[in-house]
Image 1 (cartoon, protein in one colour):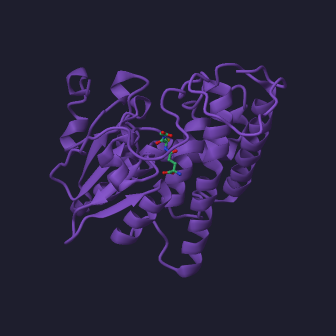
Image 2 (tube, protein in one colour; image 1 turned 120 degrees about the horizontal axis):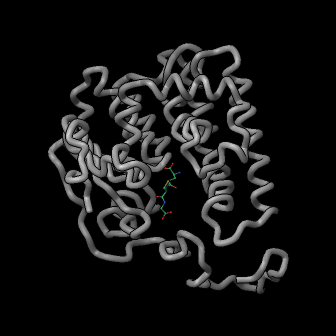
Length: 289
Ligand SMILES: N[C@@H](CCC(=O)N[C@@H](CS)C(=O)NCC(=O)O)C(=O)O
């Protein structure tokens, strides 16, 4: 790999398998499965195949929020897909999501299985199905979806751009870190201004837009992403911090954010969730090795 500034792109790009970086062993320029393996199947209506990343926890938070409301039909099995080990490239996973990204969901509650992938699509699917966490009026629903899609579009800057170059790239390069810090701080400023006169993203109603944005920007300002609190001066976005702390206290969020999580403190990891009682038995023995 060349130093920054030394690279002259060849006429045709070729795949360098040894290019280093945290995800070099799983990144490939081709789609499809790498190995034959069926996905496990549990007893609940929803089968979630995921890892507790910011995109993954959007769904476990949403399902826990629905269960918190007493909606038993939202019961789910959360199976761990270790993306660092390439489990998203199994034949079973690719069958539900040809794009090989977590989270992916199967709804087995009806006559036929429904496959749902892309975290934003899954959130809308669950919100529409259970008529919760999405505004009822068309105008308010549109505003909620504006912000949900804003988040979907911002994640590649925060995660794929800033997070990748600040935390994961094999070397620190000023140019990309600078470019993506600028954009992430601009997005934090957008949120800070938005939240200056409202409790939640869409006024006084807690919605899937809050769930999606909290999972990324909430985690960032609470110091849980990339160790970048000081670098990005996250505390200066006071309205975002206040909103993030408010959502952090929700019981469903406390549960949902640890499901399928395999990093951090052991008491904040529940590798798989098949029953509400799993949260009480969160011991080392329950961790999937
Ligand atoms: N837009 C997708 C992005 C999903 C995504 O990037 N998932 C990451 C983890 S957060 C993943 O599965 N990475 C594995 C890989 O890239 O091979 C969504 O929101 O569902």
